[in-house]
Amino acid sequence: MKTILKNPAYSLKDFRILPSYTDETHKAADVSLRTPLCRCGADFIHLNLPFLSAAMHAVTGIEMATTLSTLGGVGVLPLIASIEEQCRMVRAVKRYKAGFQTDILTFSPEQKIRELRNVMEKTSYSIFPVTDSGLFHGRLMGVITDKDFDPRFDLDRDIKEKMKTALHVGVEVDDLKEANRLMIEYGRGFLPIVTREGTLQSVVFKKDMDRHIRHPEAAVDARKRHLVGAAVSTHPEDRARIEALVQSDVDFLVIDASDGFTVFQKETLQWIKHHFTTPAIAGNIVTGEAFQMLAELKADAVKIGMGIGSGCTTQEVKATGRGQATAIMEIAKARNEYYKKTNTYIPLIADGGINSPIDIAVALALGADSVMMGNFFARFAESPGKLVKAGGKYVKEYWMEGSRKAFNLRRYHQSAATFFEEGVVGYVPYEGSIFDAIPVAGQRLKATLSTAGVSNIRELHENAVLELQTITAREAGGIHDMTVRRCC
Image 1 (cartoon, rainbow, N blue to C red):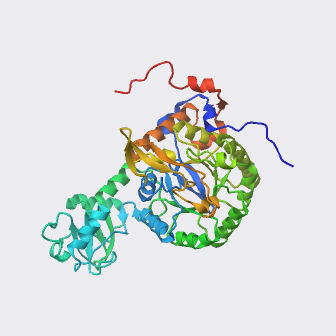
Image 2 (cartoon, rainbow, N blue to C red):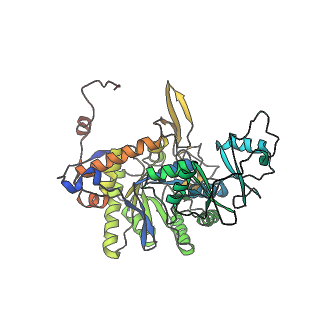
Image 3 (cartoon, helix red, strand yellow):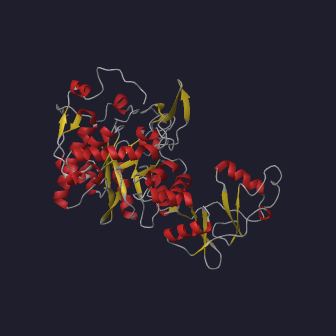
């Protein structure tokens, strides 16, 4: 028999967090945003900022994933048609080891400067090691930069004619402080690290080291490389993709499905758990019953949300979905009951319907451990969307995975012949660099926790007091009865 639930579903925007007493231990400056992302064996992978960029082509590429990890969060690379390309992106993010880069383009002395110039134009890189073999782990012969040759006259010369051979190097240096000391001593912004025999091991750039020093809370693995996740589908042919991503050192897998309460999700999760130890995040789901299934299958974290993305039309075209606040509350309750019975804590990721610091705070207060966002991150320079000018203002192109532009058949279990859209293509306001915006968003979130009388996200779960708001109460909580002057 059919079941009709008469209680309404609520969105994140229906709630506000009530203030609690703030004492000297709950000052905003002392609030911690460290949170478990997913289980990893007997421990967890932790983030220092509870933000994930969505596995969407318009949101997460190499630059977004690297930048967000630098700031303490993590990016999830989308499901790309080519397995090789997705793995290349993973390796590109992982190549940074606390400033020690091990995947740098190199040239041989016999190559022409024309080849070098073409690579410079395509990549915007300006400095390259030169090795005897042209391979990264060859014997270091010299270094060439964009200032060492004149493109008007030198393009047909060999690189060896223009490269610098008097080099300052670090010999078997593996300590960042020592590398920094050497760069200061040599007055250089670039330091090759070699073996005693002269084989190139890694390269340290001052700009990368400066970035590491400025952002000590970066989300990194045990080898000090950026954390990164990758999306996979439930289709059996993606098992080769999963294996390739694991071999590429991806930190965690995200089973990318609009509906995670299926036999397909079950079989995929079982297969991953049988073959690999790499954490697997499952979803998306919106009910406690679905959580129970995924928990029993040993999911390392669960994503919550269906049909509530800013450009998602799933609820309009299929009548399936749920208000995000209600979904989080029900699944958080199921998670807490499961934890009491098994002593196994499964982190929850709120995915969708989150595009402001208010939404983030409410999602965490209701029980999420972190939030995955698309619209929020698509606005920044680091997202892959094209920057265009419309109506005199700059905007970024943004499209859903269920749109015809993305054509992500694997995520929605559709075929090319019967495809129908579950998302739209559009634009979002351009808001500059993530480096400028995310620290402010993090500080706003810390201020919220301070006002709620807590010092971390776990305490927020346990002690937050939330209240439903009427439409008029929400309106009164915003700007009203005045004209805003947009100036300083």
